[in-house]
Image 1 (cartoon, rainbow, N blue to C red):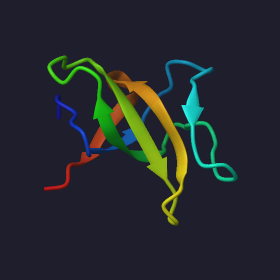
Image 2: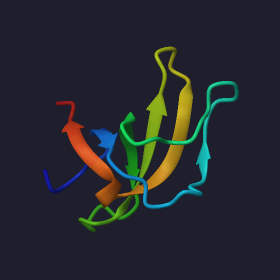
Image 3: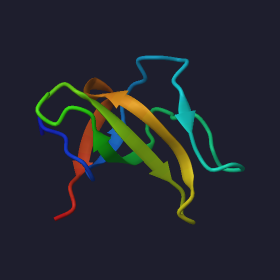
Image 4: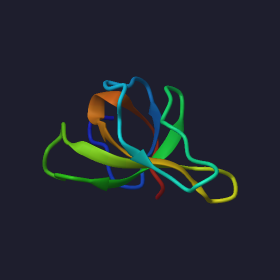
Amino acid sequence: MNKLREYDTVRIVKLLTNDRKFDGTDMVKRAPRVGDIATIVHKYEPSNLNGRFIVEKVNDDGYTVWLADFEKDELEFIYHPS
């Protein structure tokens, strides 16, 4: 799939930067890792096919493990809710 959209489920396939800024819920937050499954919550420039995304990983209790910016090349499409 070429066009990633908000609410798509994605897998992190690579990290282009080692010092990525991220946020999350205290006590559960950690840095993003290759292999993490997460959701696109915002696309900065919807018309730009190679734009950046805000991606969020939550745990089973609904707490944010991390929230961070990603480039398209770092993400692999898994699923889009209908």
